Length: 558
Image (cartoon, rainbow, N blue to C red; front, side):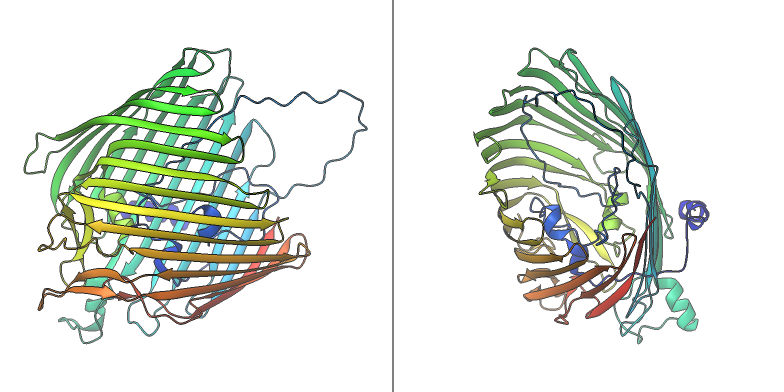
């Protein structure tokens, strides 16, 4: 089995038995609520409080969000004047710390271990390693324990004309379907019951990218990538993905360019013992105008998908216009943007099981298509300390993926034929000289599914209302304290099989506190308190999350 092949390689990286806690509701963010993800400042709950003095590589992630909000930004032609040449006395540079080790233990957890290693401040070559182990033992909920190990090795080499990047990522987890209680018995006793509910999977990602550096003297630019992904689990489901992403542009002049973005994907998989081949094509040719004040993109987007295991194996396609524009009302201060887009997303079991760990192995794989997406928004800065952003949008989505219970333990993936989604997202952030930070974000979503009488009567597990508040204070560059309050509105969770009524999770708050104290330049201690209000909530129907939890530990930079 694939996950057994990858597990020995992963265990070589394990430094110590460890822990983690899943107490943060929805894992710090609701990955089902599309389009309205908050900025990193607001929800990045995993950022270590001890800042590594030097960290060039992006933090490795395992999340694959199907609808990630795209940033449509303006590139200016401003070039600062060269500094005056003068003699400077040579001085020794201060030592640079590139590495980070974090250990912790908590109320419901065994130790947490995180490691970050980077080669140093060389500008043309950058490589590093990140690794995390965490696990949690059972508490008042039987079998609510898990372990996960994941690591990333990545590098970047910058030449005069091009940049090469490479990445290897490995993720392994083991857990249980813990819905229900101890009264659920099967022949063979408790050991056989645990084994029947045990689940685990491995994800492997190997990728490379080669792209040209910006050079105003060159009319051609290119960006080409290749990615190999693999998935395997205890239920014998498997997927192997090959992604090719050739893209390029021809610059007609300094303000106009003609470009093409593309993705070609082949998947060989076995889902519920049924072999399948899937093909996906994404082509987006277009013309871009950018004079530093106005940026406009106009083009087409073509998608094609075919699954050999589908009832109709001839495939489906989608074609439509893409128009996006941004206007800098006041450069570096205030801008407005709008757009009309379409597009298709290739769903994978690889991604679906990561989002919902309790997914049934019997899943049909279809693409999700944005038939229409219209948005309007603005963002800017009131001053150097205050920034804001707002967005209003309307979407018509074909085959929206919805998770609904097929029994008390597992979820089935169903698709709504045509869902409409109206939403707005507002946020404001305040930063006073880096010592005091505060912010708020509000997301409101209205979902209307096409068939109110079926299992897709609602967009289950997607909160129509979410309010986030945060505040942080830094004292003397030594003590950092932070508070995060997340409030989720009433959310549909499923259908009552006996009455046919919608099961709704009520409104609940989640308050998290954290503090970090720097003892020396290299050592700090930290304390986190999750779900301080002891709220009872479920991320997925029948799966209650852990309530009040506390964890503390040590961070060492070296």
